[in-house]
Image (cartoon, rainbow, N blue to C red; front, side, top):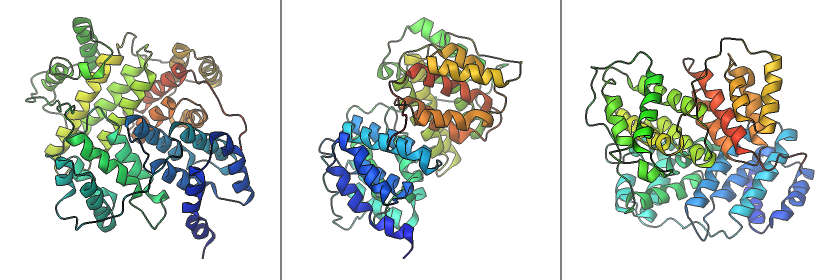
Length: 436
């Protein structure tokens, strides 16, 4: 048996030991396992399984902690052991504090699983949804689920953690022990069923009809102006639920749809990525935690929309994401600044000033320097490393909201300043020095 397979077989024991740990015991416990040469990858696999073990109280806070843990683990998968272990130990400590060890066993599979997972979601049958999800994953893999999430009968799960938890569970599926490859999806599919039948589920905002009789000179500037004008007119509260309404985000959708008739699905999605990043860059706000949660979920929903069974279904999912973003913009992003345009090239002195501004929490200076970066790839990796050792999860959420879009050259330069603003405004309370 290969060494990696031997360590993987030890995963259930690691998880069981994590369940009995107190937060202050994590350092010594990890140190002991490192002496036995436990690979970082297998430790992270066990941490992810520990995070996804059902708790006595499964609420929204618990699910957000799982999303944040997934963001941290995704970053750590690209790190070497020396740099990754201190951050991984801090991640385990956070999970022990926020989730505790009060885990309960996963329910055993029972029943025939007749019918579709989509039917189970619509009817709120959580056990049935869990069983059908496991069967689908065994037969066809994670991609078999995504078309059902974005199909006509299952609109975008707006204003929730679900898009991110679906996406992260799929990306980290390979980290699960081979004996239970669907475990990362079990809790999220149960949450999907609960959300679908919730009386508090908001409707999905979609434009009634698209036209091509209006064309702006600059699409992103036009969208920013729509947001500014709506905020001045409506004076919306910092409540995304109140802003997600036909007269709020829905009205912005209708105005935008006047000129979107000729846009492709790819252009409509790309414009949302760029507009969201520019809105964050040009905004002084205090709700970094809320903004980062919602923008991560919106961007994850855009990724999931690509698995829709047809182009019209994909377009409906993209428009649903637009409605969600407009609600975020009305609630938290007044866009009170200007879109930065920097002609001077980025040099070494700019980089020193950027890092100094980040350390001091000077968001305006940091954003201005980040806007001068021509090739985002030159500095993105360093920013990601810095974000991984910050105690505030907001920074990593923004990293993973925009990182999948970095290969799209038309708007990659606009993404870094948005991440930098969240990092600077988060004002982390703790940065890891050393560790286990």
